[in-house]
Length: 498
Image 1 (cartoon, rainbow, N blue to C red):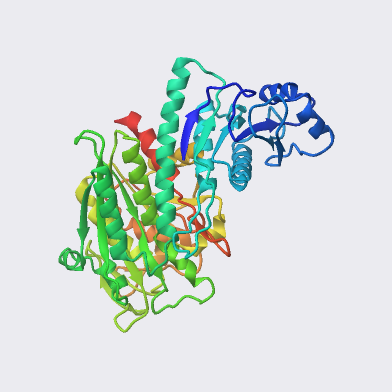
Image 2: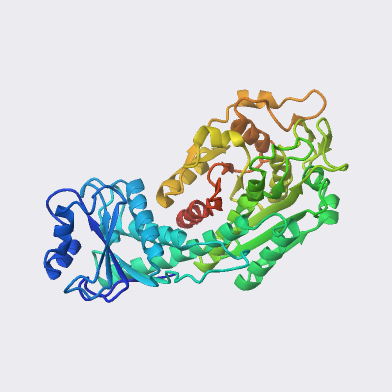
């Protein structure tokens, strides 16, 4: 989808659809009032008749209004005019995006971006509009035999209050960056939505190669022999029960000087997780194709950074495996040796993500990173604790954690810090190995992070548990592409520190 700044007056804009706000109270917003005057009071009459609610996200479509060039006017309820919270603004955009998508419009103009949002500026409004409308326009039908033709929304013009040359220049830069982020989100969603018989570890590596070729990135794909030579016994043990070969994907984007230490992103890439010998329940198991959404988010973030030409250095490391039950699969009670030399007692083979991340975190050390962030659909406990709205965040460096919290608020891809006290480490004790791969039923998200921290002791490290935010479950299951916006915003914020 293409985004631009609107250059036409609201009454003369011949777009397919105008999206304009209505608010509670007696006064209409200036832009809506202009339409109302031009149309002889059509909008105020609709409001007086009770045809449109001013509650957040309520919509009403009006067609062929006199005195207005646009074919349609979509009225969008925006609540109180002086008390609009960021989450409410996103709700408004989501409702508008879905309404316009259902109309089959190919172009539209949005005046909702001129609303005043609490503690946010015009650039944030533009960023949220690009992100939200891109998400609303997304559909995944590449595997359907019959594809119904859809008049997909292709162009949206966004409006700003301050139209000075300087303001327009900043706004266009914002549109460019967030269009790049939207492209990264779309890649992550496409990869996540593809089933396990399509998106295998080898396929994921091939997709990374294609991305590297398109964007002139450096790439290295480690096969099982090379990983074995490096001593990655923990990672390799997970894939032994599968006929699909494991891979370690390393993708490098260099947008800054070589002296700038890279941000290393480590993404869990379990392309299908049956649980291994500790087999998962059958109900909902098809959603375990989403267990590689951490990997997808790494590829999406690197794509966003490269398209936006961010002056940062990023290394993406993706351990890609399939976790299946087989005669060669890990068994509860097995002990494996990680690349770091630490031995791990496997109590539950369904706690496999941490086993592959352990070796990937050790491998990350060779890049002398400024920070390391791992992203993983790691624990059901994160879903229980935090639901679908925010991702779990833990780490060994509070400055890094705080930077991710800030980036989450700015991108509206929010995270919540959980404690990682030394007391939780005690739950990982093993009487026959250096560490156990699970810490019992309690504090599952925390003990999983504690496990990973044993392999990130030499780094400034943070862990994102996206088990509740990486996809939507149920009949309308769909990958979300999170946390690509969060990670890209973190990279943008890091630029000023170089």
